[in-house]
Amino acid sequence: MTGRFKMLDPDCFEYHGAVIHQPEADLFFARLWKELAWQQQEIMLFGRRVRQPRLTAWHGDPEANYSYSGLRLTPAAWHPVLQELRSRLEALTGHTFNSVLANAYRHGNDSMGWHRDDEKELGCQPVIASISLGEERRFLVREKGQKSRAIVLEHGSLLLMKGESQQRYQHSLPKTRRPIGVRINLTYRMIQDQTDYGRRRRIAG
View 1: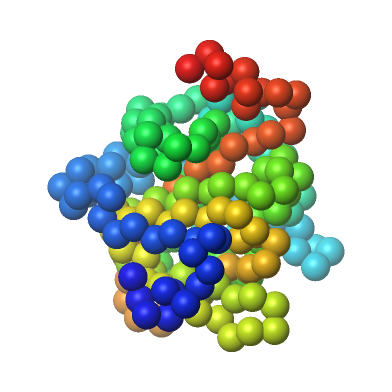
View 2: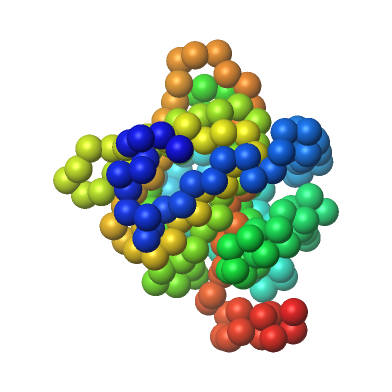
């Protein structure tokens, strides 16, 4: 964990390096890069449609529909690696997840702009568990009126965003000019817009 990242509110962020050890992380990365049906979606940005500067794939339970930036996503079935990681994350964090947004950053020009994950489907204080696989990239966090702070997201690491993280902070993954390979980011979420869906899944499990 970087020194600057330690200055963030621990009630909002937790960072755990190497929760997946390298040989297994290498295997998971290779399978997901090869086997997921990656797409480059168009989104609404400042009133116009633009292509996202990354590839994405949305997977989850059948009811876990999700909307952001003009997109309406219907989940594909769970890939075995995504399912395995969901089980591990639920055991590790004590939280329940019914979906995952996978992002693939192919090179240094692929990026994610400043944003909050505050869509209504996620509830008022969502818990988002973010797994990083592949190349290391800088992740920036900023609170309104404050300077941004950075952490290098390592291969096999977990970043947990919780509490008021999506109300108080924005985050981004900036471009880089240095030569860099592919990074896959898996952001596990709990979609809550279906009536008592989360409660029913926890009881069933």
